[in-house]
Amino acid sequence: MTRARQNANISPAVGRNMVINGSMNVAQRSASVTGLGATDGYFTVDRFLCNFNASAGRLTMTQTADGPNGISANCLKLDCTTADASIADAELLVLEQRFEGQNLQRIGKGVAGAKQITVSFYVKASASFTFGLELFDNDNTRQITKLFDTTTDWVRHEITFPADLDDGSSPFDDDNAVSLTLGFWLHAGATFAGGTLNSASWANNTNANRAAGIDSFFSNTANNFFLTGVQMEIGPVATEFEQEDIGVTLGKCERYFQKWDVEATVAAGVWFNADLTLGDLHFRQVMRAAPTVSISSADFVKVYGAGGAINANDSSPFDIINKYSVRFNLDMASSGTAGQGALFQTNASEYIHVDAEL
Image 1 (cartoon, rainbow, N blue to C red):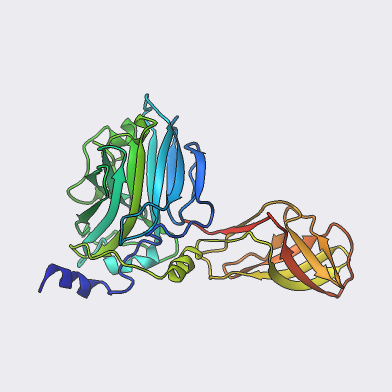
Image 2 (cartoon, rainbow, N blue to C red):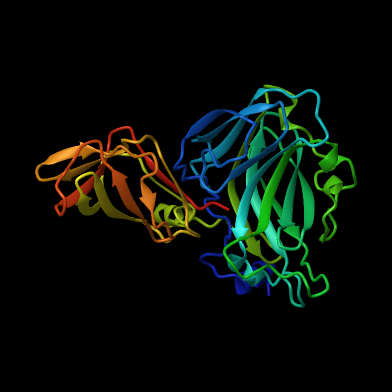
């Protein structure tokens, strides 16, 4: 039996890639954000978090139409805009995807029969760099890191991580919290790079061993980093990058983040009294957990009733928030008629964001 066939027997032909949006095709929040480096966050390409700490370096993060032919039209691009020539001990830049424990049970980590994990990805940069790829077990504080090199051309890296048998006491939790982080280490101070790289086998975490030997993305404002075709699967061999329908990918992303940012009807409800309307905003996908809801302004929606429209005037417009929906509980800018039906429509250039990211 070939090694590729062994992989196929371990993971399904469809859905073998545990990475969401590895093709970088979905970017709900923005196509490009500048000045990043002070605060962690999901800024452009869905499900890819920029994890920063203490660096003076700054970057622009972009979804860019420059992917390798036949893999994806899109890639994630980081562009260094402010260099960091003096790296403090606690600094880091890690590009991450975080996984729910209930989506990792096929790995069998931490117990007899645990399986190898293979990560593959396409990468290029503005020059030759050495960076690190880490798997970090958030449930049991264990990790392993492998180094990889970049060139100015697209190169596919295929990196296999050994099974973590441990002592039978460190499986992933079977829940909707973060259990595993896949991290691309692009910059690190001595706190994370001052030891000896832990690359041979999983080990209880020692911070100094997580990124030893990597270069710094923030070394020069000429530096660029490009990534796409990211795949994580069970077994010792990297299979061909799994091409996924955009609707499927978007649906997976919307488990973690959804937005309404065009002028459109979003809910129906009722005028509860002259100054208050109630209605339900149902999510397009069931979310990972009850989300955080944010709006662009207090008059983000207008409410139709009895042939006219009245703007909301409420900076805290929601209650009864769960993973299926939120309820509008809106103070209005002027009075309506109690008992009449209400139609909720977002105003132009306004938005509603719901966030259940890990």
